[in-house]
Length: 372
Ligand SMILES: Cc1cc2nc3c(=O)[nH]c(=O)nc-3n(C[C@H](O)[C@H](O)[C@H](O)COP(=O)(O)O)c2cc1C
Image (cartoon, rainbow, N blue to C red; front, side):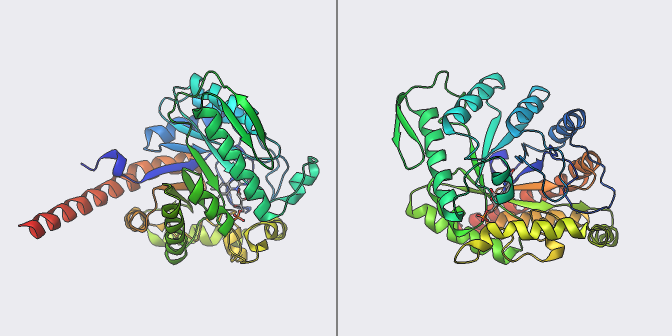
């Protein structure tokens, strides 16, 4: 058996924001409210998902009219599950590190070490304007996020924490109780620009990137791993994908086509304008949404590009190929969440585990014959 440490991991997007994961008028059997989310979380942990990711939004974009706050919602899901780890999105600016560290340490204590955090750096200027927050330019937002992460780690792991940065200051601060997780709560970060990668290579446990094709992912991972090595830092990689798994490839492709045909054109176009504050705004023009077409943006984290659309066998083979590129976790969005989480757990996941096992046996016999 492949050791679970060596298995690729799966997360799902918590729909704590209304409107579903695609900006389309197609029917989406999902719900942003709590009761649905509890049933979904329980189905996900029964079906092999180790992580769930909440989103943070203060104002609506692209039709996402209602948005539950991410930290309290994550805690509420943890209270109704047993094994799932929930990643709460946090936005430096509205949050300060002292408050975030304290909130998350308490949740970690209350949930036997099952909270994680996703530090997001902001892409939606309209949101920051609406809540009266400053809007530093793109790379400066990452400098602030990096200090934020340094502070979280220091507060969680040091007896007395002092820090004198551009954005945050601490003087011999002692947090008690500390989190259960050691040395500290797992830290993810979302974003794909050069600044995002530089930050991940220095301070983050996980680099979370938008969906993309294999070549673009390979480039990002190579760049990230070289930089991380230079900093003697270890970072794992997670990628977004919108999964459409159906018994036949034709069915899966037909669903994709219908999502795009039914796109909410006005909302996608408004989203496309807002995203220009993100990766495309950097001088190198890289990062999330920098090269996304209208069709790509219908799934607002470029999830179609990862191409996990087809039969369970096709999807399982592509997942194992992503693992070979250096991907450690796949974050998944679905059209009809609960039923597709169950289909994924029953039909796709066993094939992934079987392929991983075959690869392990093949490499074991290759190394045995090399040493014979
Ligand atoms: C997996 C993932 C999850 C994200 N979640 C959020 C979120 O909940 N709230 C938010 O404001 N931004 C979120 N972002 C956006 C990023 O923090 C970042 O602002 C955006 O990706 C642009 O970054 P870039 O210019 O470095 O590519 C997320 C990004 C990714 C990849």
